[in-house]
Image (cartoon, rainbow, N blue to C red; front, side):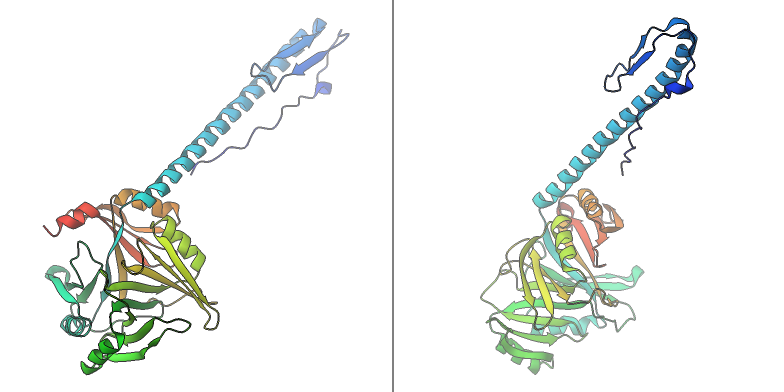
Length: 361
């Protein structure tokens, strides 16, 4: 942060305090607007010693003032340079090649959840990795390969079979061609349906809501064929305008649309890196008058690809986000990442695009 020094006050020496003898007329002109800072002396007579003393003091004051002016000018230049740098970083964010990679959350029984997602929701198990030294296992599931599709990363921590989802997390969205048939299948497998198929209130899109074995909610949306069936992550925020600005400026997302529902006292905003019908998007929900929520310990984070984790961290800081992991390579695999929190405390990890692809090699 550049500190701008205040301008020095005008120098106004008191002539009444100077006692001159034998002076018929005395005139001092202080040319503060002239860079030479000259004094003009008229009819000095025997006042030369006093004026010499005054001139030395005044010159010292002017030098101090000139120094202050120089520091202030330097400060202003530095401020302008900093502002230009900030503008460059935020402009770079808009050009960065970003994509939602995966969403991470914790489950109490990994095999049970994998079975539900593959049999009821039609996902594929893409890979698993066990980290016994850190006592956890990951499973990646989705509708397409990780290098091109948005996927789910499940985390099972040894010996932990239950988590608190809290009130802040909303739901995941899955696009299906026939909501009613999908709901019938889920019921046949013992799944829980919390909203039967039907048109969304105030619209025509057919939807339904279900819960997985851990209590995570999924919204089923009826759509035609799409390259990205895992299409939404809904999170609740306490200030929608603040959240939109942060996701646009720091994360480089585009505001796709907003929808206000005064009857049910909520407003939603859809943001992402591409259209809703072909890309995964964030659905941010603001409930009238609610500024804080309980996050629980179940939902973990979102992962987003970037060409430069260092510039990304800089942009997040400029926009008021909090960096929780400084940008740099991970031990062991050398993948560069940075982690941060948005103004509502939601965590996002940015992953270097090239390093991410190397993981699959």
